[in-house]
Length: 306
Image 1 (cartoon, helix red, strand yellow):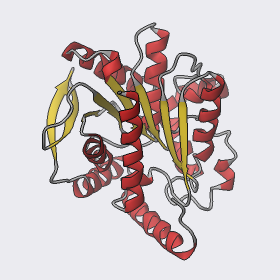
Image 2: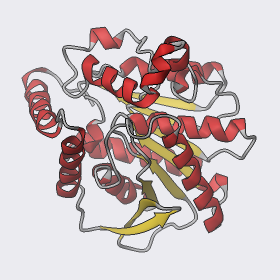
Image 3: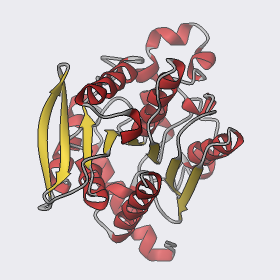
Image 4: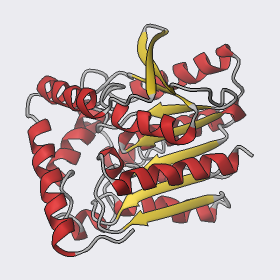
């Protein structure tokens, strides 16, 4: 859907103001603000949330409050630059995803940086994957989805499963995935003035927190090219069908478009939708284009689950 002119500019100004209210220098305040936003915008009368403990980790099942498909499940990795975010914050997305697909969605609170830098999040994602396998789901019953850093985590988890020669998920759904921590994409410059959500300072802070201060002393650039940290540099041969959504006005635009190109080269069945006039993880916002994007996610999931 194309958005143009003044209406889109006004909407992006609103998003910028909301984002500035949520973001705080104090990381604990930032996390609390996100949770408040998730509690406010993530409530839907047609969905139920059930808390679960996964090997000492908080998680929650989000389901539609009606008869629905139980065979397949969506494993959701929340965003937040690996520093912030939670299952509660992600309800702005998981409730929409559960409603649009009529599938159960499992989100989990992986350990966050800087207290727990890489590889803590990847280890936690693997623990949740193993939990689903113990519940009786097969790898092919699971769709892994994520936004921003959660898109990174969804890819890293799949690369880890591949490395361990385990069965891979049925498919991947990635919203504004953060795939390249070397920030090599041109959109970091060409979209810098447009993006109402992300900027260079925030991303650099998130990278330092996630990769860890000690790594900066020894081969910093090479560290960032580790495919478990920057999945863009991974080997995607044998990867499951993947669907990528990204906004045309975000600095991570090329993180998505280059991932799409790399996956095509690896003969992955991959689809990319670039939403004109949209920003980073616009699917969180309670407006028409966000719901249309979620419907497209559902269409992709239905297609691969046939």
